[in-house]
Image 1 (cartoon, rainbow, N blue to C red):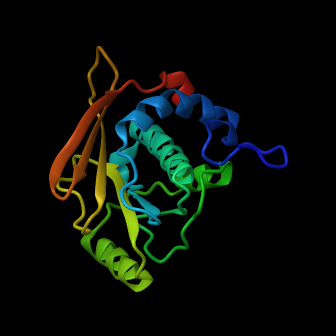
Image 2: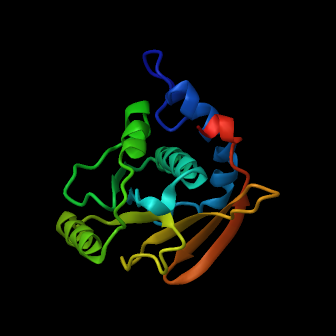
Image 3: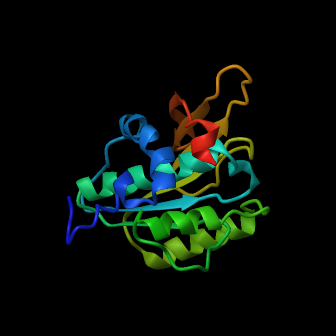
Length: 192
């Protein structure tokens, strides 16, 4: 799906070469892991935790999730937007182009997604009054995912296995585990 010589925003080709080589190997596995969009006409909003629990391989996985969710929304002919949990007042981004991925990478922070920030997102989402599919993407070690009704929670965790590198993905829906998977992250040289 190309226009005016530009790669579609939901493809790894739309990313800078370094990011594309890290994200592309994860996309097929993620696409098979994510559930089909529910309902009709719903937009998709993803909120990424950019805190300290998402360094290294989980950060690369977040980029892959951004691209996979953008692709999934486009295939379902839905609008897509995303934001950062630590930045509830910032404007939403609407794609997975190179500059969007660079914004996600640059958003890293030492601050956790606190209850007051989550409350600010909850209020913002109520103000938007739009029927949307909501994704929260962040670390598992922070405990239960933020309480936002009807949200999917995609928890990313580096297994820290010294023998076999892997990322644990856990999908929660309505407070229960809806799926789990292991992903093999790109090699360190690619991820850097």
